Length: 236
Ligand SMILES: NC(=O)c1ccc[n+]([C@@H]2O[C@H](COP(=O)([O-])OP(=O)(O)OC[C@H]3O[C@@H](n4cnc5c(N)ncnc54)[C@H](OP(=O)(O)O)[C@@H]3O)[C@@H](O)[C@H]2O)c1
Image 1 (cartoon, rainbow, N blue to C red):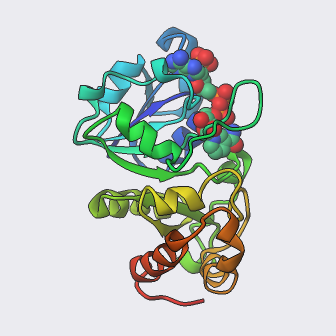
Image 2: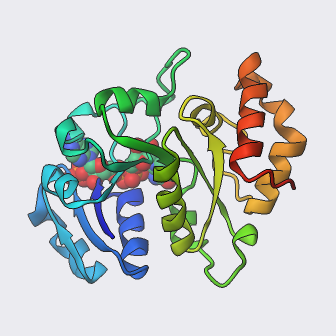
Image 3: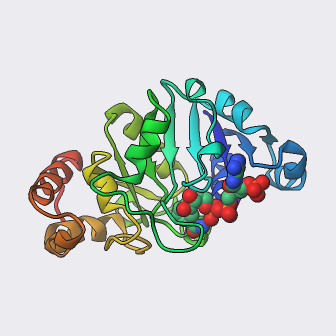
């Protein structure tokens, strides 16, 4: 698969390394242009450095790994229309803390910026050093480190789930961009945890009531229902 990566920092470069190792064709980009990525790309093996727009055009799947607040870091929306776009970004303020998004979630706002993209929110809850080191292809999927996914496009989520499995992790579906997206926010109880998929599902079953603070009102029941269905009714 051709994967375009926007952002060549901690998450972008780590994901690039893992995708190359899994046999994918990777193009990576940053704010300073391909020349500045020469050394990184040489160390990655079969990967290319491109501009942001060229990497977006190159990818069948495109990973967003730039600062969320930098709208100018995103390519022209028409370049991503109809493509699977992975949103790894968190809405950190440059001066610290998070943007208050009201009832919305950061990925819903990304989708407004990139209309027509088949957006999947994932890789946003995992610390980049864990992403670099905790992949275990030798383990059964349920015993691997969980990486959460949220989105409204089932086929896009399936494709991204395969990618996650190929790099040694376990995809765990949290539901829609709204409900799952909220569960995956930086202040949630699953953020930066090192649960296996089995532990994550048990957590959802046994502990989700603790998420009431992050997911108030009727949305909690909807999220629970959605997760049970989306994870094939698997329990614990
Ligand atoms: N670090 C983590 O463990 C972690 C975990 C999960 C999710 N995330 C999220 O992943 C995203 C990237 O985080 P990171 O830690 O990888 O950041 P990082 O190491 O600071 O890298 C940021 C990358 O974005 C590029 N960039 C910044 N402004 C840009 C612009 N205006 N146009 C084009 N490219 C631009 C930078 O390019 P230049 O170097 O050329 O400026 C750099 O390659 C963030 O949204 C973060 O919330 C991070």
